[in-house]
Structure formats: C-alpha cells, structure tokens
Length: 370
Image (cartoon, rainbow, N blue to C red):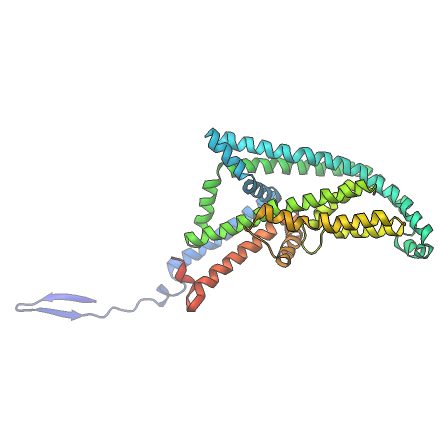
C-alpha cells in the first residue's frame, strides 16, 4: 500500500507492504462461499421436500404440461379473439375435458364386458385348434392345464370381489384427472410467466435456454401429437379389422395395439401376427391372409405416412433412445413416463450440446455463460 508523506521541500513516497491476511479469506471456505454453499444446501433440502409433496401429483403435472403445449394453438386463437385469458383458458380446458372423458368412459365400459367374454370364449377356439392338430394338445395342456374356463370364472369372481378396491382406485383416477384439468387451466393462462421463470432459473445464456426449452417442447409435441396420435390410429385400424374378421374382443386388442404402438421396436404386429397364426391353425387361411396384409400395409405404413404429416421436420426421434426413454420412463414415473422419459432425454441431449459448443476448440464452460 502506498502512502504520501509531505516533506518541507518535496513529496516522498513510502511503500508499505500489506500484511498477508488469513489464508481462508480467499480460499474455498471464505465467508461468502460458505454462505453460498449453505444457501445451495438449504435450497436442495427445500426442493426435495417440495418434490415429495408433488410426487403424488407428478402424473397430473406432466400430462397437464404436455396437454398445454399440444392445445396451445387453440388457446391462443381463443385468447386473441376474446382478449380474456381466464375465459380462453377455461374454454380450452372444457374442450379438452369433453374430448377425453367421454370416449375414455365408453371405452373402459366396453372393455370390461369384452374381456370377460373373451376369457370365457378362449376355450372354444382352443378346442377347435386341438381337434384339427392333435399334436398340439400336450403343449396346450402344459400352457394352462386345460383350466381356461375355471380361470375365467375365477377372474370374473376376483373382479367382483375387488369392487371396493377398484372403486377407490377409480375415485383416485378421477381426482387425478380433475387435478390435471385444474393445472392445465393455469398452465394455459400463465404460460408466459411460467416460461420466463423457468428460463430465469437455468444457468444458461438466453439463447441456450431458448434452445433447450425448444428441444423439450418439440419432444413433447412429437410424443403427444405425433407418436400417440399415430398409435391411436393404428389401434383403431387393428381393432376395426379384428371386428371385420369376427375375432374375439376387438376393442380390447385395439387398445392393446395402441399401447404397443407407442413403444419403438415393438408395435401392433405383436398382436396381429399371433392372431393371424391362430386363424391359420384354425384353417381360416383367407382371414389370416387378410389380417397379415392389413397389418403389414394399412397399419404398418401409417407410421411412415401419418407421423411426418403431423410432426413434419420438427423432430424425428431415433427409435433406440426413445425405446429406452419410454420404457425406462414408465418404469420410473408410471404412466407419465411416456412424456417425462423422452423429455428428460431430450433436455439431457440439449445440455450436452451446450457443453460441446462451449468447450469446442479448447474453450471453457464458463466462456459461454456470461
């Protein structure tokens, strides 16, 4: 430190060396850094507590967010026309609820009836095949020991005996649905403020945050508007052909095919191919051929034709990581993993892109954060 000492004839500069301070002042355990670490730890505890509180509603939050992105164009048009965000959001939620609740209720009601009838009628088809191919009898007996009718009755009795449990589960599902629509209203009405809040919390530049959020939006759009829509159409086509060919429980198998169509590397052939073999063993080669042709052409080509039409060049997900994301997401998050799994993977990929851009040509991670 330099001090100026006046003299009678001249000014003399005296340099005084500063005493070294405690080494911890500029080290890892300075007061400022300790306070920052304490704040991070406290935030971590608070976030974990909030996560535990939100965990029962994770599915509702995920689906509400996904639906908000999918139906946002409709909400935007209504908001522009009416200039009233509350009314526009309420109208959009009402439209979504009507489009979801009604069909789901009718499908579930029909599924219960078809499953019980299908289980009871399986033995008749099996007996027909065994009569035609007696050599298959030992294998059939090993599979179910000839107890399909008894098991069907036991299944029906079990369903009847567990009505209180199913009723409780139905009440919980209904509550989750209401919570989803409740959250959807606020996601639509306050989407701008929510977007700004999320972007402000990300340790990224404005451009990087925009690209990361854009990647997440595109993934949700491709998953909901693309993959699930295509899977629904494939399930409808499959169930329709089962009904035309007079195969048992067409609605049930249509729903199963829709579910399998959402998983890459599987698909509807897991259902219609064994059904075609089943028809062939019964000697119904014409019906079996129709089912194979319909499955390979009409159902199989829907993904290649309808998906690009719905999604366009916005995003085309690779089957392998999507398979891991969906199956792993369902295992980790339940039904909401269909959305959360691909979103988590796409956000991870976006952050890795940020890492690669910042560290390219010998750069550092801090270089692009300013």
